[in-house]
Length: 76
Length: 194
Image 1: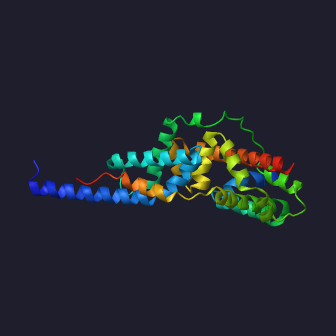
Image 2 (image 1 turned 180 degrees about the vertical axis):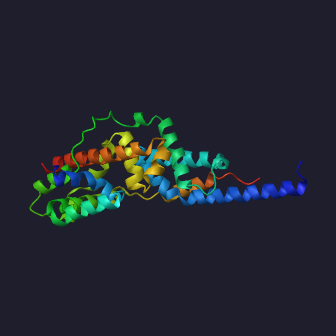
Image 3 (image 1 turned 135 degrees about the vertical axis):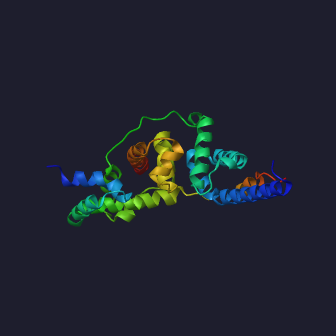
C-alpha cells in the first residue's frame, strides 16, 4: 500500500488548483482531517501562492498607459 | 458593387468596431504588463514588449474574433514577440533545473526557524527579493506557465493556447516549475540566513 502522506503530496497541487475529481477531493480531505503534518503543509503551500503573487505584483507605470493609447490608429 | 450609402454604413460600423476593440484592449493593459514584467528581464524590456504588443494588436485588430478571449489573444502576441526578441540573450546562462519534492521549501524553512510553526508566518521568512530572484532563476519554459497561471490567473487551457503547447504540457511544466521555484526559494532564503 502506498504511503498516504506521499499520495496526499501528489494531490496537493491539483487540490489547490481545484482540478481534482470529487472522489479525489474527498480522499484528500479525509486524509487532511486526520493528518496534522499534511494539513500544515497544505496551509503553507496555500499561503505561499498568495505571498508570491503579492510579492511580485507590480503596477504598470502610468505613463505607459498613455504611450499605449497614443499607438491607436487614428480614424480616417 | 455596393452603393454609396452602404459603403458609408460599412465604414461607420468598422470604425465603431475598431474603437471598441482598442478600448477593450487598453482596459487590459495592466494585466498584460504584469505578465510582461515577469517574462522580460527588466522593467524597461517589459515596457517595450507591451508597446510592441499593442502596436501589433492595433494594426491587426481584424484578426481578433469578437467574443473570444481578448486577454489571451494579446498575450499570445506578447509571448511570440518575446520569443522573437531572443529572450535567451536577456539572461545569464540558465542553471540546471533542480527540482525537489513539493514540501522541500516548507521543511527547510520550518527546520531552520525559531520554533514558530504557524504556516502563514513561516512564509514571511521569504523576502520580496528572494521571490523575485528565485522566479527569475526558473528556466523559461517553466517560468512562462507559472507567470501565466499562478500570477496571471489564466486557465490551463488559455495558457496552452497562448504558448501553443498541449494542456498536458502546461500541467506538467507547472507542476515541475513550482517545485523548481520552491527549490530556488529555499536556497536563497537559507543562503541569506547563514
